[in-house]
Amino acid sequence: MQVYSIDAGQFKLDGGAMFGVVPKVLWQKLIPADENNLCTFAMRCMLVVDENRRILIDTGMGDKQSEKFFQHYYPSGKNLLSSLQEKGFEKEDITDVILTHLHFDHCGGAVNKELKPTFPHATYWTCRSHWEWAIHPNAREKASFLKENLLPLQQHGVLKFIEENEGGTTSFTKNIDILFANGHTKNMMLPIIHYKEYLVSYMADLIPTAAHIPLPYIMGYDMYPMETLIEKERYLQEAVENNHILFFEHDSSITCCRVQKNEKGYSKGEIVDFDAL
Image 1 (cartoon, rainbow, N blue to C red):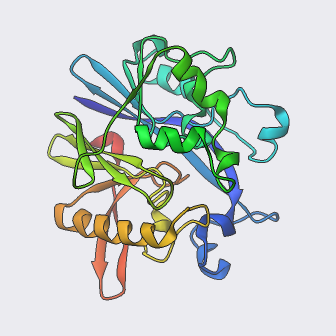
Image 2 (cartoon, rainbow, N blue to C red):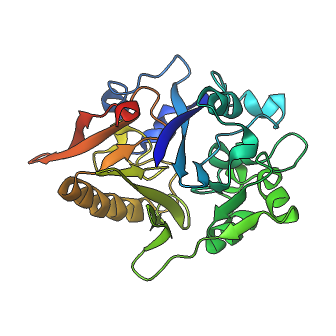
């Protein structure tokens, strides 16, 4: 088994929206904003090679939207396919794509400009209830669920569902468990990878950057922030007790770290060199 960090580029989002009720005087020390209050974030995916399966987790925002759309987000840097090639893989090699959730910056790269699945031999995995949530979006999330990112997967017959077991987790493979979270959006999936002696948690948007580890640091984008608070505290307690390595999808400078707890609460612990695991 081998794991790889896959760079799908960077983009910008409003710092206030990313940090919710936390004052700018605090969060800008961690992730500085530009003159327009925009902060730069990563779109960091993961490739898990496990026996004969090559499992890609999330796909970045892709490149098929209009120029007007991209003007809101200032995408830059590498793209998903070239980053896979740098690691020695072609799009035809991918057997499975786990989409943690269906917001455009996590699933846009799943479908190409021809509105066909980017990975022609892959099965694409989401959660049935989240799929229904995304294709019948509420007004608050509608701008994040783009039909051109979603419906082609169903139309081409490559979409399958991972169902949540009682207790909030399920097993995807013998080495990958799925933790479900509902604060950011309905039934977001967080893969937890059993790799060598490590537990590596792909944090998606529960904890998008290392700066979001402290409990009050919750995105304004979250549908149910109090649910996020409960889910974060529950997860971080487990992460400390079991020495998890947190893999950050959106942190532009820190790929992963451990968590520490003291009298002030949870915070970033040891930064981990993911490529050296």
